Image (cartoon, rainbow, N blue to C red; front, side, top):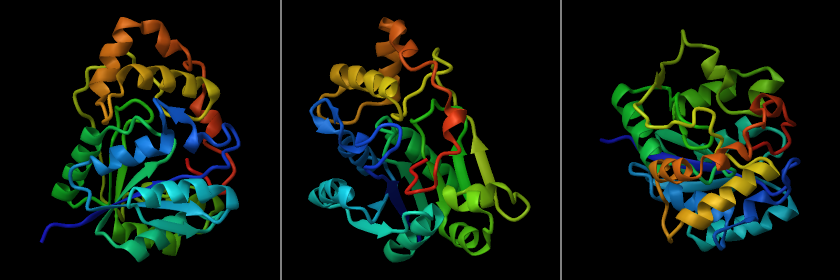
Length: 251
């Protein structure tokens, strides 16, 4: 029997760097709706779930998810690993595709390829390593997620989802696969975490979105015509954002 895949989308409204970004407009729709649309377009995903935390301001994203037929898990505000683990426990799935709500350029093709590789190799953790920030998605075997939740004992291991797994390659089968990618913009940043990120995303969506998810290849073609756009958020240092508060974190 083919393993089942549950996509868990991690999102919140109370971002410290760009408050309310999940519902900010991109081509006439909330950003998070685009993320949902892209996840639902991934071949190999059996179900999609929103994982958020218990805060009144998250009502908007909860209502959005339910309006699209996406079930919602409301979990710990401080413990992201626990929230993911419990969401996976409730909704099932042999593998968990992890997507964050600030990535409206998550590419369905890249995600489907990651799923294909992981299932074929029976990996515990799998991701593509050479993709622009914000375009890929990692996949975790449910049993590895359970082990990470059971054995993690450092605060930073609860801030994200996979640190414990990555730190124990002797226990887990971790596959990192590079794929051939035509991308002349080697430092391209396609996540939305700052006003500059949102400015670039808005321009791209305004020009490319025609009612359905567009692939990364179209983004490259567009930027090749207007290469100066890629410099809008080029000075953002992602490393300075990796140690943010664990409070309902989406990183």
